[in-house]
Image 1: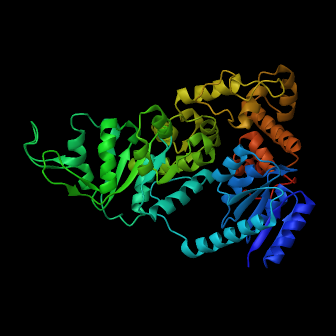
Image 2 (image 1 turned 90 degrees about the vertical axis):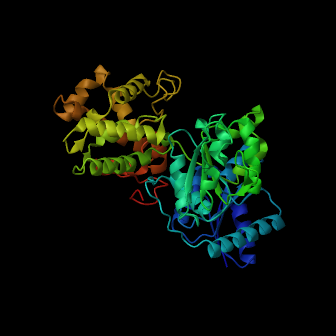
Image 3 (image 1 turned 135 degrees about the horizontal axis):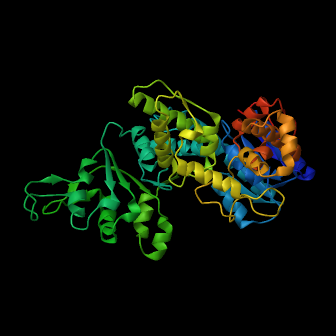
Length: 505
């Protein structure tokens, strides 16, 4: 017997689905709002959730990421009163089981529910919790947890994996992680940098050669493909592979056989392929720059790594991890962090992603010398200048301008940089506010002014969002844990809908 939750504001739909659920001998519950539905889902124990798209307090599709991130998350069947191709795409990308158009035939609804429950039972039986080896992989954000699930699935399979993501997101690190968690972990992990392959030596590098095959071939050489026999062959920047090599490599993937340069017989190599690229291979196929048949071969299991700007809550743990590494490398005691250090980093867009962040942290580490705490002053000036300019260039709320896009802010700065910083800097040039600030803080210090603005900003934020933490998080650009910390600091409480609990986790 399954436990079904119906989230729909239409009383008739709720009653119909509840009746159908009980007729199928399952337990059923129904709520009429998104906030109530999320609160019930957080308690756990739900196998399948029927989720309406248009709810009084939000869009059901927007909640999919949060639902799928829950421990033992339910299978989701979307209900909608109107056909929406984009909505269906978002729903499928969000991992829903089915997408039903209201009113849906009873038979179709029953079939979708039966299949979802059967799938869930099979998944529970086949997928025991997996303890992954995650050396040097850092991140607790929702986006990263999705990646960890994908790593777990890829590690248990033998199919080819294509890892995509911007430069610096950690594609090789994830490739190694998949290898370390696979049945081939004890075998070689061989890296092929496709961008560095030269036209003259590409076949010799990949497939090897026999002595005397060409000028300079003084001895036999084993190619990288053979070196990966029994292990994993990692094609880094596969989008840079020359077209003439793509055809030859396609046959290697199909047959796992190849002929070294100058050899008369073929040799075998039982490797598992993992490829990575920061380019859009589908677009390259359309333009004729990449073979479609090769793409189908390497993209059996896709894994897309999110850019750092989309998971700012991971900046702090990444900093702690990297500084720990540096302290161990230089044999120094662990260093701490001033909160402003993270405020500046969270306001930057990180075009170079984690690789750039680690470079900036190392520069700050070196600049701090023997100091036991890292301050914003230790960060490189170019990063601090870009963040400061972007914040100062943003118009004050209510003047009809945008929130950072197209207003002169450099692309290296996040449009949703922490709103506490924005409010403080926007208030500073306003001479009319100066007497009120000095009277409230009792002195003329910058810290006093920041504290006053921060406190009043939070009060206004809670009032404007009705105490709804999720809305406050989205409006402020702060992470949930950071928002809770600020509320606790100023003794403020959020009592509106959608809270779930008084703690961030």
